[in-house]
Image 1 (cartoon, rainbow, N blue to C red):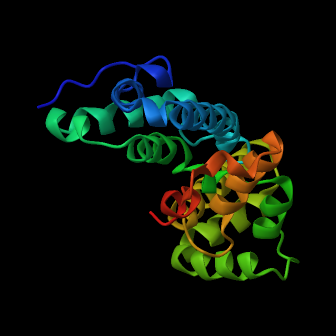
Image 2: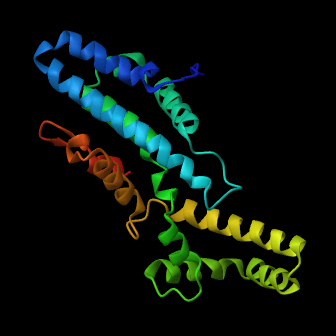
Length: 214
């Protein structure tokens, strides 16, 4: 069983080290690889911040800050054979890092998206999709209604906990779905924040599609 290292920063990952080693042996690509590493670092920094927002509307869900992404990255690195790792191009290494840091960004809900899902008066496609999801949990929905009807501090807290669990289950199941395409929206938000759409590009290679296509 491979030993999984404890990473405290992305630069400690085997994929980052491979990018550095590759640049030393391919001086003609050194400048491009330097820019690629800077772009990857910018994306990971912003993704780590966005990831902390997963629990904003789902307080009982697991933490999805940078610790989670570093753990995923460490596991990925431990699973790649050393000979295979040495043959990876910087683009492939960058994709591994980006995938580790962005795979759960579709679980981040903006305030607008949150209300579009939970507001019974909402007529959005996401609300209709959520209503279809709730048909699988009729007992829980009925129980929540009874708790809300009792309208005490204790029953309202219990209802909120159940609602949070249902929402977390729904988001976990749908966070990579093409509709409403939250993952691509979060990646675009990172590019907009940095005012640089080239963050997901290495020369002519576009990195955004393989990251979002799973």
